[in-house]
Length: 440
Image (tube, rainbow, N blue to C red):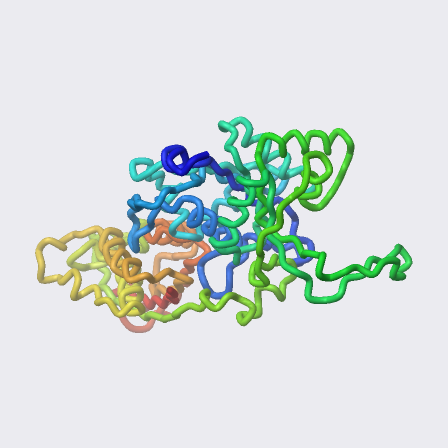
C-alpha cells in the first residue's frame, strides 16, 4: 500500500483484550477489574486506553466531558475499528456489567463509548464476548465475533492483565504485522534458561541469546488466524498463546521489542508495590473537606444527594436546600483549590433561588475535572434525627455517582442521629460532613 493509499484508506485494526479468566492465582479476585494503586483506573481500563491512544490518534479527550477530533497533517496509517473484551464464560448480563464498570473507570473511555459521541469522529465498535474454558477458546470466540463485523485486516490480541503497555510497543507490533503477517513483542530473558524433564533433571542447556520471553500484544492478519484457530480446534491442539497456533498452521512470527515494564499482573503482590509501576504513573493526591448545615422547616421537601426523602420537613435554603450535595460541592472544590459554593453560587444572586443542587454540583465538578482532577473516593456523614437514611442510602449513592459520572463504589454515605441533643437531635436541622480524595 502506497503512502497516498494509506492516507486515504487507513488499515483497519481490531483489538481483542482477554479478560475471561478466573484469576485463581490472585485469590479469586478478578485481576483485570482491580484498581491500579490509589488511582481510579483499573487494570482493564489502563490496558484498553493504551490501544485507543495509539491506534485512534484522531480521538482527542479534553479535560472536560467533550470528545473532539484532532486534526493532523500526518497520515494515519491505522484505524482502530473494533475493541472486543472477553468476559468470563456464562457470566451473562452481570458479567458484562462488571466488565463495563471496570472499563469505564477511565473517564476517557466512558466519554468515548457510554456517551456515544458519534458526531465527533468515527468511533471503534465495542463488544463484550463470553469466553470459553481456556484462553485459546476465548480468543477463538472473539475472532469469530470479529468476523461478523466486517473483518478488519489486522487483529491485536492483548492480555487484559497487562496495563503498562506503551504506544511505542503497540505501533511496532502493528507495523511488523502489516509487513510480515504476524508479530509479537518480547524481551530477552535475564536468567540462563534450561529445559528439564518430568523428574526435574536438566535435559538441554539453552542458549540465552537465542531466546525471548514473549509478551502481548500479538498481531496477526485476521483471516488466516481464524482459519488457524479452526484447524487447532479440529486437531485438539492446545497452547497458551496465539503465536504457537500461527507458527504451527501458518508460518513464522516476527519479534519486536517489548519492555520489562509491560508486565502481566498475576499475583496479589504485583499490585501492591508502587515502585514497580512506571515512573510516569506517579500521581498528585489531594483531600477535600466540605461541611454544611440547614434548618428543617415544615412544608419544605427533604432532598439528600438528589433523592427526595419522604418527611414532613425539608431543608430551608436559597436553592433546593440539598445539604449533602452542598457539602460534597465544597469538598471537591476545596481539594482542587478552585473556589467554594458560596462564591460560585452566592445566595444573594436571584438566579440561584430554588436552583437544582445537582446542576450546581455538576458545574463545580466540571471546574475540578477541567483542572485535570479525578475522584478516588467520596465519604460523607449525614447527621439527622429523623427520618432514617439507611433505607435510602443506596439510591443516594447511585444518584451522587451518576451526577459525578463515577462508579458507585467510589461513593459512600453514613448517617448519625443527634441523640435528641441540640438542633439536630431536636429535628430542627440537618448537618453534613463530606471528605474526598482526588488525584491527577
